Length: 409
View 1 (tube, rainbow, N blue to C red):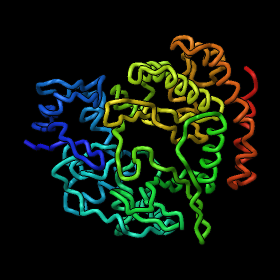
View 2: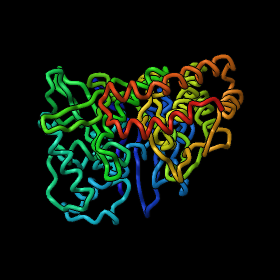
View 3: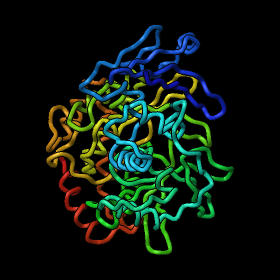
């Protein structure tokens, strides 16, 4: 029987949460008695804190409970993980989900860590060359079997999402180091993205402009920047919100929280608002979720699946909606929003948004104010695109779509 100990690492203290076990492809979990006594709401909807053994039986969701599944990468990170397993002479298809969590070890997003870890020793002080990593990421996506650069292997294998990315430490003088673990004094935790095969060359500038536009719309977003290199690279980076210095926050996606698949439409926006209220018990957080919906509608961010919304829990057990991320022009499945707005996924209107707000007790006046602020921010797209250096062709292409969406409907 394969076993793993799960801990919460707050940065200055580690707390044993419980133990995962796997036998005959069935996954079980049991909370540690001391953790039950403290009763932090680790995953209140699907793994409530109590004594006894839980069996993961939700086969329609994933191989393991959602709160632990959130520690695993998908897309890009999974590709790198499988390459490393093959290098070790292991067949990824024969490995269990606990083998994958053990490989993540202490390097995952959020505060959950897994012991014993099978990952290599951390190399947090390893300098990063963004252009070299971006060029190798491009070759890897094209199928190259070349030896991975250490920084890409260590810092690129744990974040979620499909686009290539790395975890990095950034210092104000521009120096970058691998950031999968704790950082030396003077560095900030960042997540830096590289273009995927289908992306426009200026995708980094586009996402940076969208971050500015989201701020103008009142959306809570993390500090972001464009990392520009001597070779002309321009890579979007966002400060990690699951880290405060080297202290950690527990993080769970909407997907993991509700066991909702991100691969197919599985939830509508009213579900996001209702889950936010149940988890945070704070109507202000619900209004922030409403604002995210309005921004995604007006800004044509249609890749709005359940892994692109997350929540953070501090060591007192208080939950809040995490800052917005992956806010960028995107088509979505079949050109539609992944999360429908009052049943409408192709062309949601202001009325559809207001119906979601009414169902979730958003004050109608506040809802109208949020919609108007968001509409006005998105109408300023050309200004934000100019600030980050988006090409004129991309600015026009996106602007034409946004102009149609921000017209009163």
